[in-house]
Image (cartoon, rainbow, N blue to C red):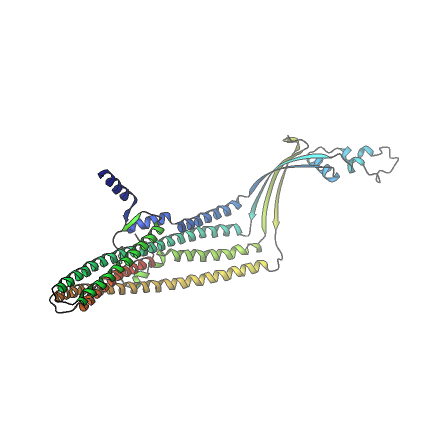
Length: 452
């Protein structure tokens, strides 16, 4: 029997544990699928940069072309390409060497009706852009900026997720505190029922006191059920965030420490610490580079091509007598495109100005956000102090009311009213503590700091 009990205890310890905020945060960041998806955005931008760099190096292509034809032009060209053309291919076999007839009207059969030929063309072609109107340079610049932008966005989302974890974790702690407070209330109301029964049996009170105590006691039972349900729901959400199904309990409230100073001091470095601000800045710079990118078509495009290959009527055509090379430089300049390029450039300018306005709007909004969060925290701190004082006073009043009831100085209704006031004060203190912790964390996030 002892072994069975020991085994059960070991299983409970193995599959359940109490989690703290730090562990909740680390597990959420590690397992959150949304963050993993955003991290892939960063990797995508890195590949965009590699792609933009790759165009600078050009491309080397191997081709093996096999063709079979009796087309006179193609056959003659194939023979020339493989350096096999003879005077006979021109039709000189039908040329009257005596001069007795005019050779000009003669249609040489060997030239016009050649035998079908199979040609194997093997070649390596290298093409490289020499000048693209700065399009490639701006493409690389934009890709680099987007790497920085998406990295900043990832870091910001990670911090914002920390605030969501804090809400869930401290919400679970608050629910647990509600259960503790309700248990304490249950002990008190149960004692009221017992004491009222004793006084009723002694004929000192009427049955109405007993009934009132029992009704209130049942109400506390209902509140206990509600409190446990809220706790289970809070744990379920925490399990969802952390991807940890074995959580059965939480520790104490996570309270962020804020050094409250002047608003100007708080906001002096906030913009540098805010990743969402950096994200917007990098996006603004990207849109600025997009203007130059779209303007590239106003410049001439210059490229080079190198080619080396062989032509023959056999598969094994690697023969130095039949190889060839080609080197070329080309220039392409668009003289007119129906204002397409200028329209694209103008649209890019509009997008840049839009993004710039949003950026300036965010800059002003961050200061307002910090100010609002600071005032909220200061208010929540004051409220918490008052709620703690009110709870302590309600505890004293309830204790005195119990003594007064025992001494028949008040009735059960008055005692239960004081019990209700004490429960309300206790619940308000718990909520004030939760709201104060949330306000402190919100201010910390708005200052660009990370929850730990």
